[in-house]
Amino acid sequence: MEPRKRTPAIIALKQIVETTSQFTGKEFFKALVKHLAEILDVHGVWVTEYLPEQNKLNSLAFWLNGNYVEKYEYAVSNTPCEPVLKTNEICHIPEKVIDLYPKDPDLKPLGAVSYMGISLRNTDGRVLGHLALLDNKVMPELPEEYAIFKIFASRAAAELRREIIQRKLIDSESKLNRLVNGTSEAIIEFNSELKITQSNDAAEQMFQQTKDRFNNVTIKELFDPKTYNKLNTILSQRDTLTNTYFQIPQPSICLTSKGEPFPTEINLSCYSFENNIYYALYIKNINDVVSNTLKIKELSTEAIILRERVDAQQFDYIIGNSEPIKKCLNLVNLVASTDANVLILGETGTGKELFARAIHESSTRNSKSMVTLNCAALPSELIESELFGHVKGAFTGALTSREGRFSLADKSTLFLDEIAELPLPLQAKLLRVIQEGTFEPVGSSETKYVDVRIIAATHQNLDKQIADGKFREDLFYRLNVFPINIPPLRERGKDIALVAKAFFEKITKNTALQVKPLTNHDLNVLASYSWPGNIRELQNIIERGIITSHDGNFNMDSILSGSKNTNTSNIEMPTILTSDEILELEKNNIIKALNLTNWKISGEGGASELLNLPRTTLTSKINKFGIKRVAIG
Image (tube, rainbow, N blue to C red; front, side, top):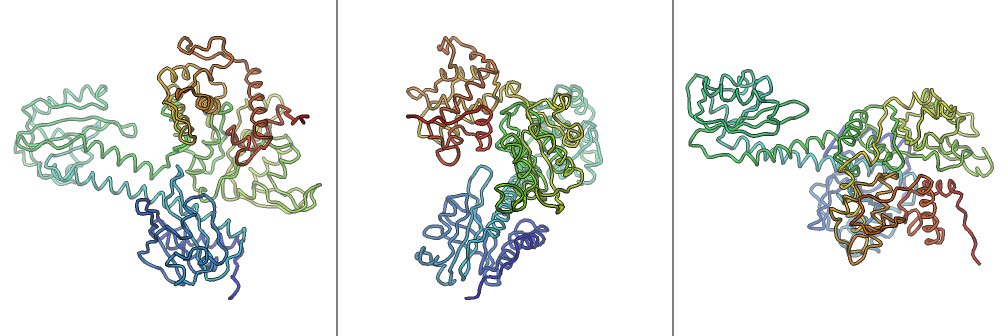
């Protein structure tokens, strides 16, 4: 067999981006599979949507041996696609795929030798479909092709998510249109200036008006003087009308465009949309059947929500309805589509990285993964190499060259967490990259050019850091183009209960423990606490209460550890700890986790998993607290 033709990774990426970026929907998927097959030199590529009820994959686009295959469905059982849908990782079978899956009816006719696949998932982890390569040659393990494959699987997943939401929107708007225009009841919307903004088909017929004519008149022209005066009396109280519903007292007389009167029954509703007040009139002849206005309202709301989800991603991992959180999400939507640098401020544990992720996912750079670096997680002598990379022999231990985070984040976003911990000398180098887009790897004289958006975060007071000479003022102004202040949990009111319930459901779902739901008393106790550790502390406490539950009841006493009185029925809030006590409690908790896992820091069953902390964060805390492993015996 001929050896596979290999296109350099950077060229391959460029070619695929250029050939797919101008498309959406079906055309995007067709362009993706065709050019991915050509550039990676494989026999076939297909992208599918998963049909869980039938356990089948329905092809969105299938390129095979130089042609598109139309209307292709694939049963999942006993095929190489089956394990793909059960993992987030690439499944690669370099050769003898037919021997591994002899019951697959399609592999042998295609002369398949090798296979590679990856699942496409929703933001909640649910499988939406998959992207797969099939070849009649051996498919060696090539890291650069893995990287290309993952990048475009991510793009395919994002497009599939958009397609699914778009379908729901179209279906919802179609239902709404059928309901609104399929009724004999006239529906007329007008604004606070009493000008008609839209109407349904029945309104045009009832008033013998054209749509263009309707959009240029005021509602005064639709009624006789007495009916209009009754309506105007209600509208004069418009400041108290929002989200209300009225029936105009009968008799109500409407006028056709020719001035001909006819008796009607009129209902009025008032609502707010995008900070503007609108009104809707539901008008029917006395003999008409009452339309289902409640259904209209429900479908209208559904259509608005789905349209908003198409235009702006919803961040399911940010939980909360409080005004402070809504304000932050609004700021995310405002800044996401720009290339402005963002500085996220907030106490430890408030979820700053989640907001950084939300900004990146809503930006035009979301086709590439966001690159992160915790400036507090590494010794100062290693941070420069992590940021800018190094060449072989640049320092002791540099046995090979390595790309830095800036190179990895080119055309994407770099999230610098705990930016206040960045050493002063590196602050100057970071400033240069932000200003000029250039840097030199450690030990190299070669200047590299990058296009990187910076999102930085810190829990520290940067004004004080600047005053103390620990942070450069010019760097602060470069980062502080668009600040977002994440509110502490104690200022988020009823969000505490929402977040607590979400953690409770997630943790109980992932464990075999059967625990009764949180009671109102539990939620009241949680709401009364000041939460110095914010979201992270709340998650840990909920997990502790579940693990130590008694007889299926959530163990509220675990939250009040250290309190003299453990009778939660007589306690309105937990014992308040000093900052030193909190640090000592955190240190002891880390030591317990390390001992319990035999000092395995990361990976399955490691301390970072037990504590629900990123590996880098746990390593930083171990160094911060000076925790050392003590040999026993």
